Image (cartoon, rainbow, N blue to C red):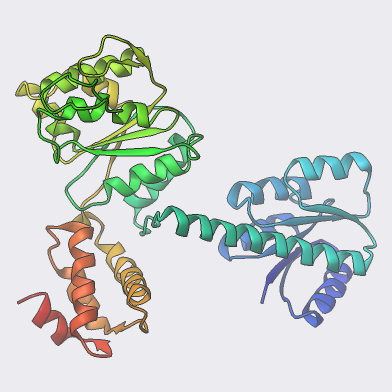
Length: 385
């Protein structure tokens, strides 16, 4: 059942609209002025807002603007007895779904509400389907550190600024990189990932820049490197602290000039790539030990995002556990198992040296080995032993 907020200083209008909408099956809240309307909107989730324009304390246009800033996906229908074409155009420009004059034609109003809700439902379903297709998980958590990371992603993603993501193994650095790409202007172009720690040092340059046929013994054909594959999109260099000095120098040149050369080749190739890097190492210490180039560090760290360990965000563990319980149940096609509060508290107090990766593995183990409910004895047997 959709929840609708009516913001109007005329009580008679609010009463009429509320009666009609409740008769249509909607849940309705009302606010007598713009100030109260903003307060209610910020404290509760609404599916649609009906808002008057001429109101005391806060004008309807200001209310519209603030609602758009808080949640631009909620449709707002403006209603006014002082309507003009200019006012309607201004309202729509500011994000209103539609503009209706007072006294409202009730049939038109109900049709407009249905259309707005239907459109909003389609937008949400499209977003869910897109996430399923892309396979990108949400960043789960409400701690201050996670809220800061989400806000940084929203600010930085639309730019082409290079980002260096730091944090311990298993904290979710790759997920941050994926969302930086997903929310960028390059999201329709490829995201190419390279795990620098998993590639032998003698092959890393070929992997990144490609090679020409015959450039070394096993080069039996030309190979296109990751920089070229990521052209127009994003290149994610994971565990960049493990990259050898020779490859570091070539990456630096690629970032400075936007050009690469394949191993064994002389031709320069233009590449348009946004580079996001991640590491579990303290790169400035690596610089002091002559293991990492300072100039490359500065090139990569235009924006720094530090992903906290799970021990630094224990308040998020209950949310993560519930998320994993649902995710694992869905993948196993079985009902979601419940976890006893004391068992959950034991997980919160546990020391997670492997961070989120370890937590997910533990939840999966509990789902498989426990009975209908996950009890404290299950946690003691399968986790704390």
